[in-house]
Image (cartoon, rainbow, N blue to C red; front, top):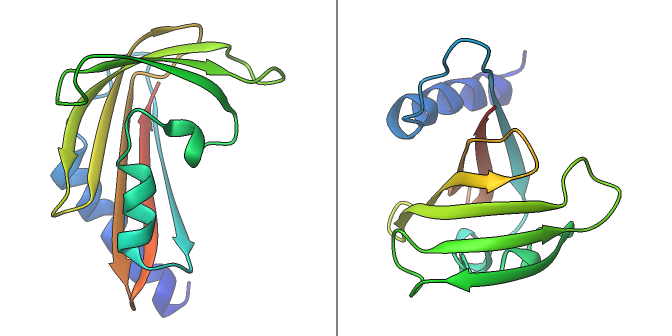
Length: 136
């Protein structure tokens, strides 16, 4: 493991500890992904924070219908393009922190096994990186 991987591992563990509140129960699992993006964090966050437009950064989303005022507790119905193991997802906005660049979504319905998605856009060396945590 090089120095960058060690930093990523420490950051991942810290973000999970601080932000991922879902406790995996029996017969559940969690996963985490970190991806560096060569773009300023403010630019990346301006796309990701739009709970009403996930298709702007998720190419597999074909349609999004909002219920609510885009505040915490708002719900979106997402249709997924064919070829994926799901066709629909009903998601509630749980957390939107513009200062820390954190978007938390709880899956409340749909034809898949996801339960919680936590998306964090942060910066390291002036570039954005994603931390994505999911529970199944």
